[in-house]
Length: 185
Image (tube, rainbow, N blue to C red; front, top):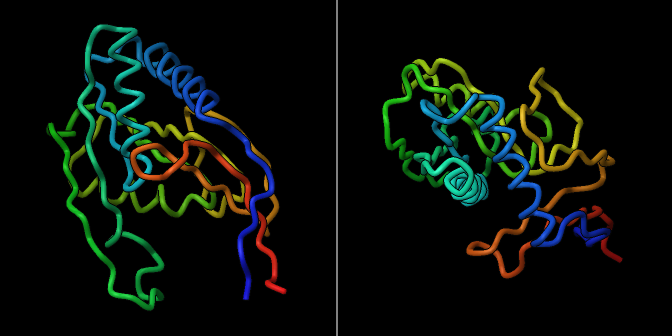
């Protein structure tokens, strides 16, 4: 039976903080302020990451951005292959997204399928002016033509590796770790 074994720590808590600070500055710069910007975190770890980016933007600009929560469970393209009954959590968008610049936030960008599902979910809720993507880690291996606008760290990975983002408030520690899939002996 395969198991995941920690291989390398990519970022500690301080590295995560620095990456999110840089992303916040890039969002403000690229959008020439944040007047019509809404941050939307993809459940689960995208939400606290979006909240931290919003806090940093508030520190920079003096304006607290609204943060939405997006559940993409019913938009997944592998939903029919899952062997369990999926648990759907509520989506909470605090404002109408029509005409807004949406910054979609997630922890890891891998194949692009999660982001495709998130785009479908957002479009079902309104017509944003623009959607941009912010991720803490981009690990490559895209299956769809999707790229992030804001990236904390680009990390080339092997297919037998996984990137685990651990965020305080959800996980015991705060760090980003590369794990390797190994056969149990």
